[in-house]
Amino acid sequence: MFMKMLFIALVLFGLLFSNIAGQCFADIPAQFKQAEAYKKTGNYERAEAIYKQIVTDYALQAQKKLTILYIAWGKRPQEEAAFQRLIANFSEHKGIAKAVHDIAFQCRRFRKYEKAIKLYQYVLDNWPKNDQAIWSQKDIAKANVESGNEAGAQAAFEKLLANFSADERIAEAVCSVGDAYYESGRYKKAAELCQYVLDNWPDDDQALRALKNLAMSRAALGDDAGTDAAIGKLLIDFSEHPGLAGAVRRVADSYRYSGRYEKAIKLYQYILANWPEDVGAIHAQKGVAISYVGLGNEPAAQAALDKLITDFKDHSGLPIAVWGVAEAYYNQAFQCEKEGMDARAKGHFAKVITIGQRILQQWGASAIAPEVCHISAVCYGRLGQHRKAIKYYQKLADYQPDYPYASRAPSMVRLIKKYIKNMEEIARSGAEPPPPPPRRLDKNVNSNEGGQK
Image 1: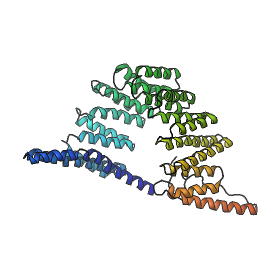
Image 2 (image 1 turned 45 degrees about the horizontal axis):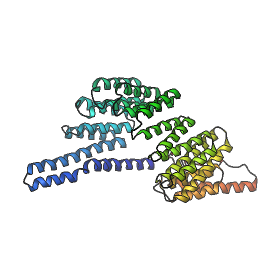
Image 3 (image 1 turned 135 degrees about the vertical axis):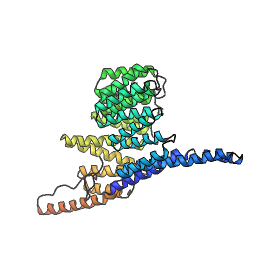
Image 4 (image 1 turned 60 degrees about the horizontal axis):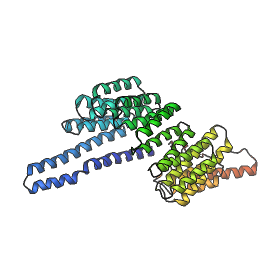
């Protein structure tokens, strides 16, 4: 219950202040300055109009955020009442269509797809000529994809093409629907939409995105020939495009996510050879190391990790990148346990600990230190080294309340100490040993709450 209330509180804070400040207050100083200038020259009517606009825009955003707040909170009557007040008070405001669209988007975030679709349709019914209309139709298709309603998605997509084919943003809208299919794991359909964009709008700014997504979809489908063809075209047609390195890296990531590690390594190395100064180069080197972990090639993985640390020693993102490699070992360790390869699993847990110690020694004050302590404690528990696990759980406790599981670390310490004491007594008496203590904070520890991972 506490975690739920904490989540709601964070949502409240973000919804009430982040976007309001960004959208409402960003231009207010300039508006005030203009109004003051009008006032000084005696143009009171123009000044009055600006002041009224500021008040109205602020009120619109606040009412929208209040509606979104009730969506996050799960208070249906208040949500509906707040929405009706929004419509009643701001039906003629130039920003009302976007406000309703934003509310629908938040419904999708909370997987309230039926409600989201109704709101998107509300935009289309009431403001069919508004700039938000094409996005609302596109998002109806996406909401249906995300909810698994293929018939609804197809109907919405066909309506998107029929009603907005002349809109200059249509290629972007189709790409976005393709993204939804890709993210839902329906790679064949995603590839079809990417190809549709390339066939119908080959000169559009979205062509790079479509071709990159086509390659990613083909990679996820295991279609080597199709992927190679898409990558080849990508490298030729967009050789001078500033986003090419990032596009190639996304394809490499897709190979890695689908377990095609050799293919991923080749693309990552291509990025490092051709764009060593690119912002994504550090991620490519990390990808090489993670891919070798996936292949079980420990010497190559270690060499790639060493190269990551050497080549990017001054990069601010290095601690997180190094920890990403540790997480790959961590995930592989549990997979090995699942498959009965206990010795190999222990080797991976030990590797996580080694990398974690290096991070704490070299970048002790980094933002990932709490997670490193947490996972190191878990790994020591998996290795049966309970006293060392206690040491890291005690370190983790110092990070409360900022780290989600830090407050529960003392409970783990008590349980492990009790287990050690019982084992010592049993060893003296020769009785049957008890089951081991919980090894992960994400398993229930004196709590009714679940955890992450």
